[in-house]
Image (cartoon, rainbow, N blue to C red; front, side, top):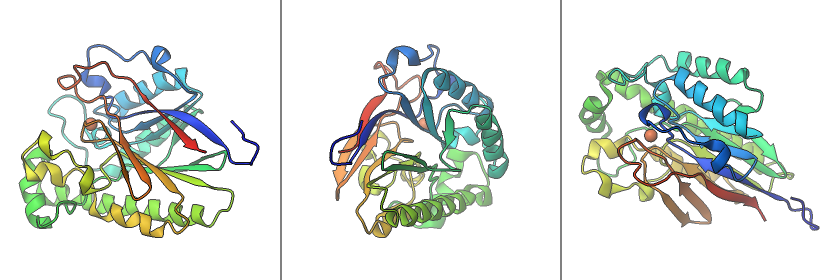
Length: 273
Ligand SMILES: [Fe+2]
């Protein structure tokens, strides 16, 4: 909605970690919908095809769906949830599927701009460095069992994390230099900073080392105009809302079937003033 002073705002429905393949009861998006735009922060399902099928359901209800992939999109179905480490091939499958859905935006490929608000997004992955004092090599080695991978494959997540960080940094620089943008919203699947990690949920350091990327905290150094006001994320299946240095960090996951005793609903966020 437009205001007299030229500053504008709009609201979105935010959801993450829908894990559609792990639930017996599908979400009734039509009943849950509060706004015309849905932001979906990854882990829609445990393989690209099921993810695309669920996105199609969401896209049938919302005018616009903004999507970033999660780590589960890189798995290969229920059978052991093995990862497909050909990341580029998975992203291409998602891209091709999303191209068939004109109202779905794969934020990985293009930001979404509306009414002076730029929404940028990437999976984020993890670099095994988010925990202070836990050496990278040890974090990779101790995390191998969780991923079902060998050392080199497990380590390749670090490469993805770097790639996603630099892509987001370029967007931050671009929109800082754009006077028509007053607000930047960052969407990642993984957790953007260590302060947001839910350490109570698990005692395994290796698990937390796969929560996010240490690099991400540097992103805001490039936000010279303090335009980043929101950072939406998922991955750790803990509901969170926390303001740090002028940025509202927010997580609203559905989670796995065993975790989702509560009734899940998207949260509503208003961007702009
Ligand atoms: Fe998840």
